Length: 171
Length: 177
Image (cartoon, rainbow over all chains, first blue to last red):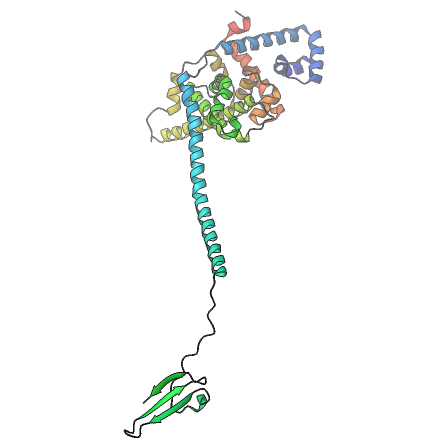
């Protein structure tokens, strides 16, 4: 290794930041080169004093009040986040609960209606056949009986269905 | 406990790092007010992100990473604001002093901070984490999200510049007086 190449590596060597292979090569050179050794030691010393001066330097620090306020802010932020989450969660859960309740009620109604269903409506009843004195198409379903008063000549027709249930009359 | 959302467990967890995080923020932003805001935001972000913290990692380095990212974002914002202000000033729109410039002028800058001014952003990040916060190369790379090679290149350059700044501005440090 040449002095020129070593000087390029010297800043890393000064902080022991070279890999083991290069460190071995550099040390071999430095041990045989007083000029490089002196330069390396000066650099190490300067950096070491700089670090010490930096440690002694007045850097800002937290006052207790500031620090507490920050921690409260962190905790408060979390609490607010939690509330927000709960609020959002509630917002989202509310329709879920509502939907679940509605579904439950619907199922209940269906079950109840199945369990307690009365006799279903029978076949649609036919409307009463129109009363007609002479309806050939319904002659077999409707029976009429005509009564004529001998005194007044008044005539009345009674209608009956095929079961002889009374269906109406016509004068 | 704090990972499960217990806020009261957060303070004892981060109290040992309150000083180092603020110091890191100060050395990266080179401004006391900015450093305080960066550190505050870093702690708040750390708390919010605790659920995603990888337990196999160093908690201290994780905090450093958040603070370094926060400081970088703030410096970028400040740079953009300054550029916008300067553009406006060139066009004669604004006559007031730049927002950051005033604060920076008021800041009493220590020798250390003036030496750090000589470094580029990445060089400063690497130098502060490796030499002042004493992380190793791999930890520094992880905190900054870059390769170990990049850390070594920037560290080498930063130490060289610091050495020049010491020779130029702080000969007493070099001579050990």
